[in-house]
Image 1 (cartoon, rainbow, N blue to C red):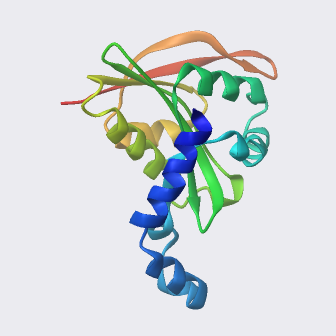
Image 2 (cartoon, rainbow, N blue to C red; image 1 turned 45 degrees about the vertical axis):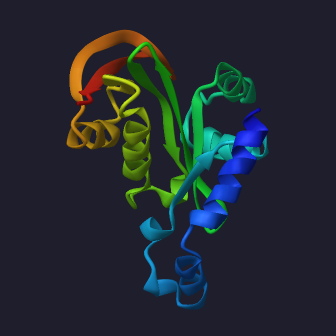
Length: 182
């Protein structure tokens, strides 16, 4: 089922995608910004090598392939963000009983700082809009860059989960954030 959704997304992107942008980006690389080339599509098992490479580079305690496979099986929204057929990042979202939960957002280390994480977060919020009343997420309390992004996008701190994340020296707290959708 997931493979079929991924194939449908690829076909849809070919039909909807503005090929002129990609053409100009190849011929005149400075004429189109990377943000203009970003596309989102459903993640497939074929994306897992690229996704796992990003995951392993970005985290000391990365998710393993079986976690992503379980997310597929559960029917979570699993997406990749790509430009010119290169996976730049991925994001996962669970929606149930009026609540959405951002499970993971990760941008390739060499692509960070360009607004890709913000675009993925905005994509997930828009995906949840109309299907959920609130979007929740957790973030390591030490991840100041991500916290600033979430707060800038309207998320508010609602609590702390003690010892939520594994850390080199034990466990690290998670800040819980929420965004009300209207």
